[in-house]
Image (cartoon, rainbow, N blue to C red; front, side, top):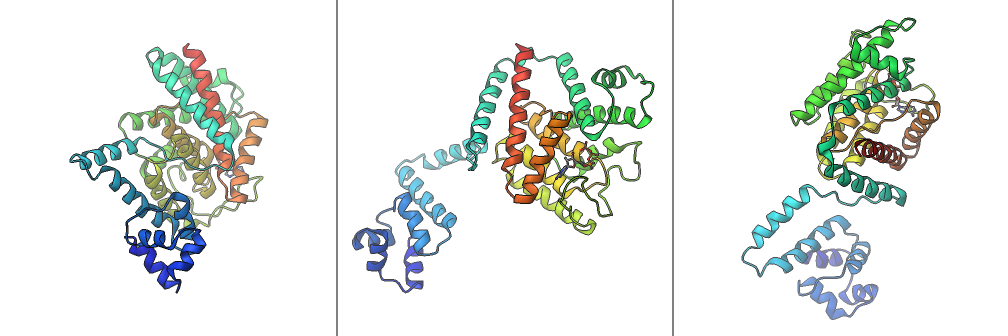
Length: 347
Ligand SMILES: Nc1ncnc2c1ncn2[C@@H]1O[C@H](COP(=O)(O)OP(=O)(O)OP(=O)(O)O)[C@@H](O)[C@H]1O
């Protein structure tokens, strides 16, 4: 396999002496690299990739294979060890480099809080869960402009009451969101993985009885996002982008930190904006489904003016810069606060 290096060197018309001098090593060491007798160090590997224009990921894969092989090959149970490594990897989130170290720190805090929560799960009860879910419905609908108070939202959802002076639509928004939470929890209990079907199911509940023609359906017209310069894709691209959205999910769902995964699924969905209405509420439900599925708690984005402004700003920054960090940081911070609050209630 180290012919790889030799071939790349030859393709560049470079002598091994030249390569050795560029690497700052002895020529004999280059020969050893090329005939597999010695492994370069990680730094030398990066140098090699730059000098010989070899794809760094490919080179790293070859290098790691040799390194692992070297470590395990003398043991008769080497294959068993590799299977065990593979199993461990299934619950391991490879480090994702964030330019902003505060994200790493928040994710670390979140993991510690979740560990703490796992110790006292026995104290969870449906009254607490129900109260927090009403708060979530209240805040998510408040973002959307619903004027029901927290108490009114509770009365409408849990007591079936109507509030005088509040529109039919506002009542339906509360009821629908409450039902969408139940739907999501039911999906979780059946270990369902999100596909287009589940997403449309959530959206169908959100717009049920409010905009029946559009409930559970991707849009067929162009839309704009009020107050934002971001232009969502034209309608004929929506289906394709949604297919890509689920492919992305499939590829990343077991190797990203769940909070990062949930935040990105939220951001990607509202950036495509596949529906005429209800994009934000649906995206927040999908994000929270992923969080709950992984043992975290609902990240409740508040609907007051400042929180809503920060939420939109974080999305705007992703859409203008292409860098996802602002939104990941925003969601991670909310998840941290939500976990802290939940822990303090349970304790
Ligand atoms: N640049 C952006 N600025 C503001 N919002 C954005 C931006 N990009 C995407 N969005 C999303 O669009 C959502 C609004 O879309 P839409 O009105 O379809 O959703 P909704 O569920 O009806 O309302 P809301 O999300 O306000 O509750 C916002 O909540 C936000 O999640």
